[in-house]
Length: 159
Image 1 (cartoon, one colour):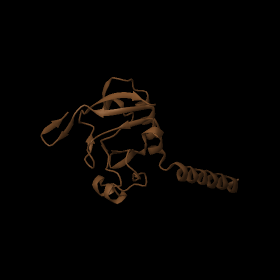
Image 2 (spheres, rainbow, N blue to C red):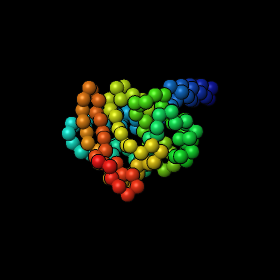
Image 3 (cartoon, rainbow, N blue to C red):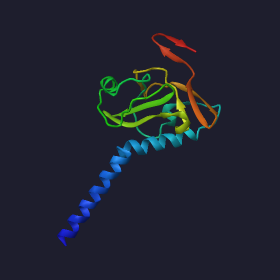
Image 4 (cartoon, helix red, strand yellow):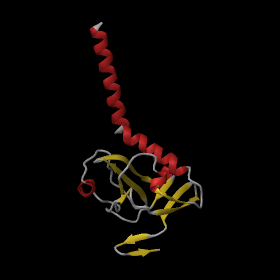
């Protein structure tokens, strides 16, 4: 009986390791899917904030210029995570959500594959949950695009 229980535990552990190897951190995977569902269900022409649309807890979201190295992103964020990936070309969506010192969602892909595009306009600078940056929502070519209504740089707003 003990051998059977030990074999079942070993098999369950092996299955969990295979799943982790295939999808990475399951929490990040789950949050990425929830974010996709939430953003892709937004209606055309509305105005939203990320606070209203992100369906999980987060404190800050980062994006980086194309080709920024993983080590540079980790240095800026202050977190090392296997969920952080580098973009391999221009035009890729990259969003790294952080909560309580951990990466809670990490999106890196082409808008055409994700079904959405979010432009933060602030490479390496976090957008925190307390900021109420408003985004316009536009649908086209099967992609939901969120673009900020204004970008803050220092003391002036660019519209």
